[in-house]
Each structure stands twice: as C-alpha cells, then as structure tokens.
Length: 630
Image 1 (tube, rainbow, N blue to C red):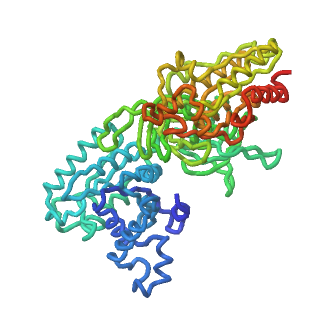
Image 2 (image 1 turned 90 degrees about the horizontal axis):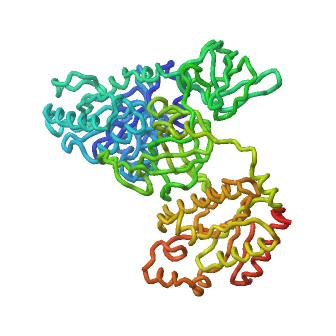
Image 3 (image 1 turned 180 degrees about the vertical axis):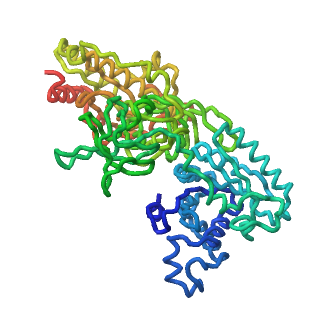
C-alpha cells in the first residue's frame, strides 16, 4: 500500500468514522475514471495526494478543496492513465459524512492481472463497471473471477452510461441477469451482489437518486458504500494472532507482539501456540497506551503469558478449542507475478503472515482461464497466469483456509536469487499426506555410517556444458577414491535418464524436475555415508541451490567444469551440438536453452587449459583439505 493510503488508514481526522476499502474494476472506456472522479467530486473531501497540488495551484484550477471542477478532475485521472500509472495500484482516499474510504484504483488490462490481484487482496468490496451499451465483456468476467479468487465477498455491479440507452430498465435487467448467472458459476456461495444502474458522467444514482430511473428503488452507490456492513464478515472468526516479535527489554518482562488478524482475546484467556501446540494463559495485554482487558481484530498488542514457553516469530496464538491447522503441504490457488515462468520443483521463499519457509510447487494441477473459469492443462505458469497447485514447505506452519482468514491463509512466493515477489497464493486446504506422514527417527545416522567407512559423506556436484568433460573427470575422481579405499557412487546424467528419469524430456520444466529428483537421491546417499559424485549439466542456479540446501553445511561441493562453448562444441563427442545447430534437438543447453554458470563454486576447473587428470588431482586435493578424506 502507498504511504498515502497508510496515512489515511491511520488518520483519526474524521471523527472515528469506519473505514471501507474497495476496488474499482471495468473494461477500458466503461467509465471507471469517471466514476472515481464523480465520487471524489461529490464527496466532502478530495484526494489527499491531490490536495497539495490544488492548493498550490488554485489559480490554475480556479478553486480549492471539494469545489474542484468535475470535468477537470476526470480529465486529470484520464491523463494519469495516459502517463502510465495503470501499471501500478493507485490508492485514492476520500470521505463522506458517514464513512472514510480507500479506493484501489487498479488497471483492468489483462497484462496487469497481478496489479489488480494486489489491490483486491486488501479490499472488502469490488465495484465492477459495465457499459450499458456493451453489456458483459471478457474483462468483466476476468475481473469478477479475480476478485472472487482474492476473497472479495461484496460485489457492486454498476451498470454505467444508462443515459446512452435512454435509462432503459429492460437493458439493465438483462445485464444484471447475465452477471448473476456468471457469478453463480464461480461457485462462491459467500459472494453478495448489489446491482445499481448509474450514469457516472451525469451523476445519476452515484450520490443522489436519479429522477430518470423511477423504476429503480435501490440505494445509490455512495449510500450502499456508506451502509454496507463488512465488519460482520469476520465477527464470527476465532482469535488469531501471528507473532511478529518476541519482546524482552529486561528480565522482568517477556511478551509477544503482533496484530490480531481476527477474533478477540482477553486477559485470563487460555491460548495455544501453533505449530508447537504448547498452551498457556494470557497474563496481560500491553499496548503503547497501557494495558487492555480485551483486544480485537486489527489491534496491535503484546501478550504476556502465565508460563515460560517457547514462542517465536511466525508462530500463531489461537484458542485451544478452535485451533488453526498445522501442515507443510497444501492445495493452493497461485497467481504468478514473475517475469520468469513458474516451474514445478523450483525452490522459492515462502511468506505467510510472519512465517517464513522454503517452498516448492510439487505439482501444477491445472491453470485457470480467468475469462471463463475453465480448467486448462499446464506444465508451467507465465506472468499473470493463475493455477491450482500443490505446494510443499520445508517446515510446518499454522494456517487457515484463505476463505476463512485472509491473513493466515494468503501467502507470497519470493525468488531467492533476486528477492523479487513472483507469486501470490491462497491456501485451500492441507493435503492429507501432510499430517499422515511423519519423519521416522533412526538411531544409526549418516555420521555413524560415514565413520564406518573412514570418511565424511559429501556430494561432488559437477556442472558444465555438454562436452565440458564432467563425466570424464568424475570417473577419474571416483577411480582415485576407490584406489584409496573410499566408498563412492556416481550419478551420471545420461545413465539416470535410462531409468529413474526416463519419463523426463529437456524442457525447462523437465530439467528442473530432473535435478530435483537427483538432489533427493543424492541426499539419501549422503545419509548412507557415501561420497556421491553427481555429473549433470544442471543449467539453472536455483536448482543447484536447492540440491545444496538439502544437505548440511560443507556436504555439497560444487565443481564448475568450465569450458567455453566453442571448445565444448568443437569436441562434440556425441554429435549433439551438430544436431542442435541443425534444429534436430530442441532446448539444448548453450544453443537454444540457457546455462547459468556458478557464481561461487567451491572448485573451478578449466578444461580448456588443463587436462582431465590434472583436474581430478585438484579435486582430490580439495577433498583432503576439506577433511572429507585423509
């Protein structure tokens, strides 16, 4: 949210009026800017972010404050869009005599789906504009689908430009019926739709009832926005408080700070801390202004407990009798926001409320056509695409379904290399396997198994272009280790594709899955106490990083067999480069598929400048220095 919107959210300048956040949607030229301009013009206050400009340049506008010229304001909003503001979410603030409002003014074009989803994620109501002449369009359906996915339960169908169809009731009823039929197909039984015929340009049924449409006896847009009850949507939700911070300024005070996402809590209440399940009783509720007897949703507080129990950032306080779920595998809806495609098996950072984890998409069940709601087969997600997926985390977290609680049911995915947010998701439910499968502790561990072999277990991960010499060098290293009496095993890219990975091709998605599987196999061999040599092109840094993070510190040794493309291609022992150049092989690394060289490998060998034997000797020397062998 912008600084302006946050400031408006905190403002108490309007007598403690309730705040409603809503989003405006609509096809191009359906009148969204005109409606926003009308709301701002006819309301008691104007945009805070435009007030300074108006007061500083009152001579130009000829007025100040709420007397701003309506046509000039609409032209200004349109000009903003011409200058590219449609690529962002513009948070606009205004107030009436009864309520304060923050409007998420988002772009409606298909390429800005991610921006619209961002705006909808924090709003309670959506106003969808439809041109009375055009009726329902593809964009109308897309926007209705997105706001439904984002959990917006209150929809206003604003049938605009009624003046251009002679305020015809039959036309309004036709569009109203079409929209109701479409919303019913979204299978969202919590959605409530209010249909209002308007002329945003003329002001009909925006802030005052229209004399041109005596057949309509419902509320105006503003009257509906002023009176709709959104607080009751969450009134029945159980208490949830995600822990942001453990507070201990001195030994006499120990508290846990966070914002109540739902429900209420009082001093003396029993609470459970998830995912651990530990229980205690609330001793006090502390704020900057003193202690409270009770705290409610939206308040930021610090809880102190009667008992000394372990509580950390990312934990969630709940009532013991109505706990949140705890799991590490989920079915989710995912909206992809990254410029690079989402590939199942690729690792991402995961953030839900204050909880953090490492996540992988284990399967992409189907993509969703946001124009029709149709389920489509897909192997990856591109920018702005939406899908139902299964996701797996490296740790258990406390959660609610997004339909029950947005705050601990919605999450984001972050690219761990660029730190960019690449996805936003909504949890449907935990997968049964998440709670049915538990890790079995064993008394004989990898350290004991490695000690029996008089070595430390490790993965030697050889990466480089085809023809660089990975397999040749790995074979020499294993022969030298075998001669020293060490216990090894080699996983070679070509060999593995004859069995375990025979079902995989060479698309980016298949390459990611190829390395994911090998990383898991290599981890098992590490657990067996072996020195495991992995010889794979493994072109993507993110997958090599995933394999590294599966094992302990110092157990993964990345070896970049660094050979220039022209040298590797000149060798072409298998004739693969020739076929790739002739177009007979698609997605060939270095030709029409990228190779991302390691940035900080433990070992780099240049096979254009040294022999395979010398490279193998250098690797053995590294293993001795690292204490893997002696």
